[in-house]
Image (cartoon, rainbow, N blue to C red; front, side, top):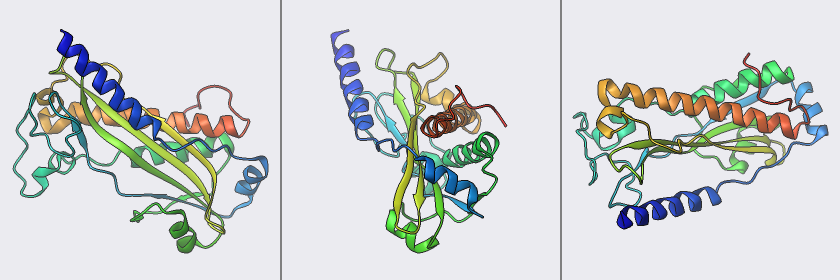
Length: 240
């Protein structure tokens, strides 16, 4: 029991330290808000997702492999793709769901019907590169900061979904931040039926559902932050 408490403390410290390094919130000012509505088009972009991480008992962050001590499972044989759980199970970056939710809600809540998603995923999230790529106006970007699984320190065979994301409104003219929001929709407790095997059974159906729910929650939180910074927050954003 003492050993488990020690591991629980270690995991809590690890996660707290990771979140302490999260990007800061940046509020939007009134002039920028007015300028957004006057823009003919606001481009919306995403970036490649980081590796799908798994934290397992007896290991620190294991990176992108399910073959870990304390709860290894079989990964489908798909050549090199089998080394990356996201690829092996056909998982897609939740940032697309976050982006769709943010665009729909801001259009509904703020009348920003000029948001235009760009299909091409940008290779890097440097502000100066966004400025060079788009030249003028505003760019809204969304990116996954972390996604993966973390074992429950109280019941080591159960796992929790970890998901966090960031959204920014960038002035392309001078590559500066006009607004920045950060969300963490990670599960705090693991439920019954959430062993690695159960999460990844049937083409990872349960894991997909949990990631989708986390992404929708993140989108709601980011819109909530935007509305609060814009002085328009009336509680949780309404569903378009």
